[in-house]
Image (cartoon, rainbow, N blue to C red):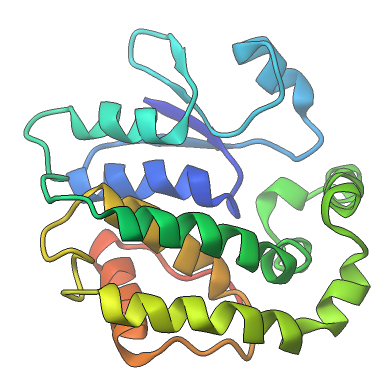
Length: 212
């Protein structure tokens, strides 16, 4: 299996963490942000992640990829899912974006290795969310908006290695969003959220992204 991805991409990390939990080999290909041609050649449009299966056919939709990877051998994502976790993830993704999007280009990630790739990202995201300098200047207000969601998650986590007590698709929803939010210097995770994040990242063998 080959995953075309961005290092900062939370949807990509869903697939990566599933492969790590399954102890499966996943070839990772970081696509420069300005390399739309590779994406179009694979699936006919600009989109990330793209999973190319062992038979050479590409897949879209991160949760479909997760199901495909988890279907190799015995499933490990066997726990029940909770609608409140799905709702939390959807709301948290939107509240995190003003904090995380302006910081990704400062982290020295491989998808921004060239000036052209970095410029492409900055232009693309500024059109969607606004001026990065202004967003970073308002960090405190965005942290204040996100903190209640972290406190909400604190009450939802059942175990440090499984948000619902048994590994499930809800872990695939939650951990990538925490990995992204953790890039924000000054953002504090509540105790159970921090323990869950650190325990899960150690378990799958990934280091957190840098903070800025």
